[in-house]
Length: 139
Image (cartoon, rainbow, N blue to C red; front, side, top):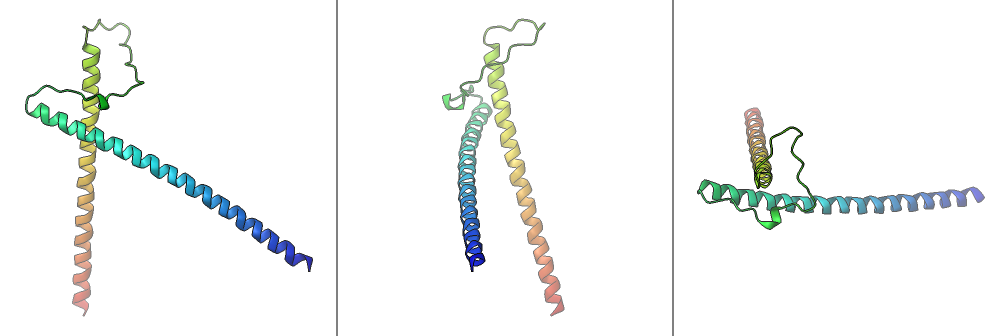
């Protein structure tokens, strides 16, 4: 029977294509996970730097940006046309202030996210307790 052989060959070809697609998807997922871990580590380091800077600012000591916090390859944007000339060092101070503001924003967003997760967990726990109480009342 020639039809059985061609059906088996088609099934084998389909299985090979499915395996190749699955392997490619696994590679893409692994690359995405690796990139996510890398970004997570970079954000964690940036958050720790911002925390240290905030602590030093709270203690009244001058802020010092560590070299790892700088972003090579970025050039400052020129001042808007028609604006008064800035004193020397103003651009660097503006960049430092913008970097600190960004770090503080990241820290506040992270804190807000943790607060929301805590609220979710507390709500889940309360709903579970209420459901358990209703089940006990039925018994």
